[in-house]
Length: 94
Image (cartoon, rainbow, N blue to C red):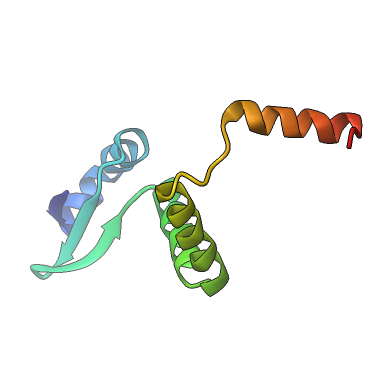
């Protein structure tokens, strides 16, 4: 992550935006020597928002914890099992 004064960021904004979009770089933009603004891609921002949504949902967190416990206990299904079950449901077989 690069730290850039706002005056420099103004003159390089197109370049910085390209780097953020293409290379997922991050930039901290300072004003009067203090960190003031972060420049990140929209995709990364949306990903962080989605993560915050998941972390703030107790039911989803409980499901994730249960999934991890099931995986650690090897209480899982193989890809072949899943395909067979999907095929059974698709054809309506009992």
